[in-house]
Amino acid sequence: MTEGSSPVADVDAVVVGAGFAGLYLLHRLRQKGFTARGFESGGDVGGTWYWNRYPGCRCDIESVQYSYQFSDELQQEWTWSERYASQPELLAYIEHVADRFDLRRDITFETRVASATFDDDTHLWTIVTTDREGEEETVRSRFFLLGSGVLSTTSIPDFPNRDDFEGDTFHTGRWPHEPVDFSGKRVGVIGTGSSGIQSIPLLAEQAEHLYVFQRTPNYVVPARNRPLTADEVAELKADYAGFRARQWERPSAFLFPFNPDSALSVSDQERFEQFERQWDIGGLPFLGAFGDLLLNAESNRLVTEYWQAKVREVVDDPAIAELLIPKGDIFGGKRLCAGTNYLETYNRSDVTLVDVSGAAEGAAGIEYFTSTGLQAAGQHYELDAVVFATGFDAMTGSVVAMDITGPDGTTIKQQWSNGADTYLGMAVHGFPNLFNTQGPGGPGVFVTMVTGIEHQSDWIVDCMSYMRDSGYTRLEATAEAQENWVNVVDEAAAQSLRPKSDSWYTGANIPGKHQKFMPYIGGFPAYRQHCQASADNDYAGFNLS
Image (cartoon, rainbow, N blue to C red):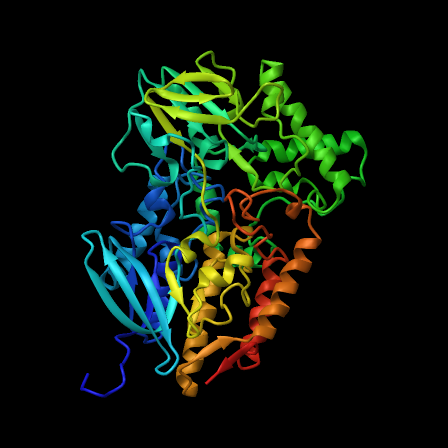
């Protein structure tokens, strides 16, 4: 650049993250002739499946649906081994995709985006990255694309004296790459969300004694994982296109047995038999037993009563069973968890469930750590290792962790402090040429993740192509369009019982975070229609210049 000349872009787009979203964005950008660089804090591709390696870690969406569909050759050559793929198999799949499409050559690993600032004169983002040695690099880019993950910023409560503990500590979302042996050790697990539910049965098999510190019990159904048969795989591959088309027409983009009838429309016996059928199918499809389980409070009460009876049937100790039953919560209000032998694990003599909710008489939470363990519920527990299964700052955490500054000097963290408002779940007023995948205001985790990623990424890159072909260099969601979309998101949420639960959908798990139901739950077909309507009308809802 000569003295006095305007800065020019080093690349057309910078992509943050090398999980499913980041990889597909890089692939589509390359297809459309855009130059791009990807930055990933991990040492290789994988995103969620690079970091989460805890015992029992696997997907809760069926493998054949939790996969890319942009390449029929890829679909035909890859064969999933289980109904629900384990972390090693998922990571192997993502590595295969990166190899097959030569995506690593555009990615800088072990490097975080520290800051990104938009210049209103040049319409460029100035992005500063930091590698593991602290070395900085500055990249100028026309577009800033975020594939940084819904569940990637780990959260550990600020327990008093936590650093005093001299034993081993782990977070399920940042598990070591080498195997961890808990044999002969007293292990404490804090948290009974999805990662706790998946890991606790396997940790119990290893540990001398396992202590589970539970603040909030969760609804969990049996996953019913199993190997896929050769006939099942062959049938799928014979009609992958038809399978995907049917998938796209479902509200969750997830094909499973679904009964649209109301739970109130049948007799008690018929309702019980239907619940039994879905229970035997297992996993998230259990919510498909009746169409109104998350719409009608009385239907939700009936499924809750069925589930409670199952817990009391499985767990031998009535007092433990009652501790495992959520009190006054919506069934499915939080993400329903799928487990294998989770409830059965509490029948073991070497597993102790500790109530740290503070709700029971005389109970208290985790009070403080010591050098040899922790004090909880008025008792000290001697521990050799602690596993924090305490979740994530979901949907917004990975975005606000970067210092992203718009042209008026406002950071996205400041703008989202009173709620993470977006347009179509991808764009944010005040932050031109920025797109976020699977974030607040989008269907996110209520749509089969990889399918949602492909749809949003296609839309984003098509929008960039339209801008290039039309001579535009700047695009920004209007304040009016964003406000209207927030209303659409809120109206969809109001039809459901889900927002009545405190969950990571609302940010309730993060102290001080503004609480609001963040995802769009109006269904994948309706969401696609909204996105298409904007594109068909020269990207209505955006100012282009």
